[in-house]
Amino acid sequence: MVIYSIKDMESLSGVKAHTLRIWEKRYNIIKPKRTSTNIRYYTDDDLRNLLNVCYLYKNGHKISKIAKMSSEEIKSQVEQYSDISLNFNDEHDALMMFIYQFDSYNFNKVLDNHICQNGLMETMSQVIYPLLDKLSLAWLAGSFQAAHESFVTQIIKSKIQNSIEQLDEECHFKPTFLIYLPKGEKQELSLLYLHYLLKKNSCRVINLGVEVDLDDVILAMKSCAPEFVFTIINQAMYNISFQEYVNQLCSVNKKTRLIVTGYQVVSQNIAWPEQSLILKNLSDTINFIEELQA
Image (tube, rainbow, N blue to C red; front, side):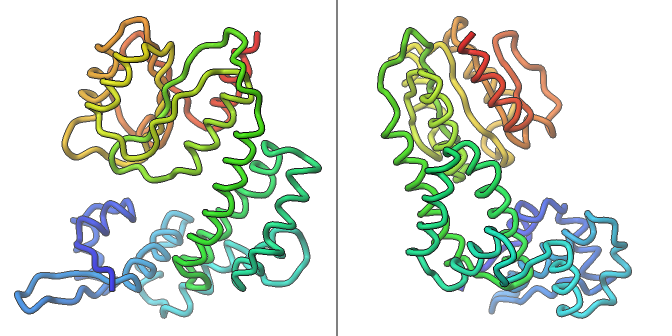
């Protein structure tokens, strides 16, 4: 059984520990368990319930009203927002059913057909990203488990990797990009898709992978002197401030441009060095990469 501290709950839900304690005492929203040494902890069910509560709260429901709902009523409200359905009204519903049944054959078949007819970029925007949003809400509602997420993630990763391998290796004098995810970042799908977008536009890509130490990034920058370093930062940093992290990257080589996207870009108020570039969303990222062709 996975257990979580209140700091874990804060990090995963985005709600401050102080607020969580108020919700606990005033509204009885979550009920922590206690270890034999009286240390509070939370379970997967507690986390799922809290995320459901947060989802409704962020969509305009008052916390006092949510507190009066049963767990089933809260789940029902989340399902209404997600419009989860297991019939075959559309492609997404069919894929959701295949995920639920761990049916890799039919899931692959639908995805392969879409990629073949429309290409990976359109498949990502029209099928995969909406599907992942729907799956996330289904998990919140208790309809799907972590195994379902792992199942679909591995298949999508293989599709992106196959698409990368099919692209031409020639760079056509385009710049070199060093890409990676820092410590605490595990969303490999985002990194792989970035790799695909860059390579599709004939850029040379050096992919360091996920959860890379800052020292290793700096070592790679000194070794290969890329024109661009591109990273995605969604999680808060604990061992170093975001400002110091950016400053250290930009101090390695003044000719290397740092590109950063992710939630922390819009949530942090920092002084960005002159050679840095901020991309607020996927659309900005795609536009930037496509402009490299000019």
